[in-house]
Image (cartoon, rainbow, N blue to C red; front, side, top):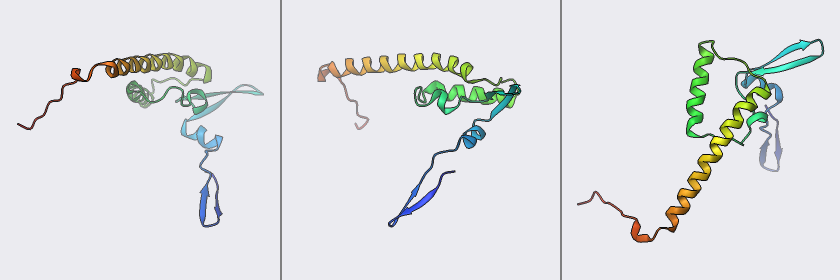
Length: 124
């Protein structure tokens, strides 16, 4: 992983992962389809497929545990990049919907008169 170099009294670290390290983390298999073509199949979507477009939402945690459970039970399938993208498009649409609804709710809350907010205290 990365390189370290010293500049004046500071150490700088290149913490980028090499492709081989990413392949190891995401368990990427290079499957030969013919003598010159390899297909990449993986248990998890690779960073270049999903990146930061989706984000980690509350359903991401449930999906992660569901996927991990299937992998541990040997019922999960390996997917290539296009198959992962199909599933991620749905998640991106879902994320966009939640973000838009959250913005709308916040906008509505901010336009309410201050007398609409009630504070309750447990101190008697």
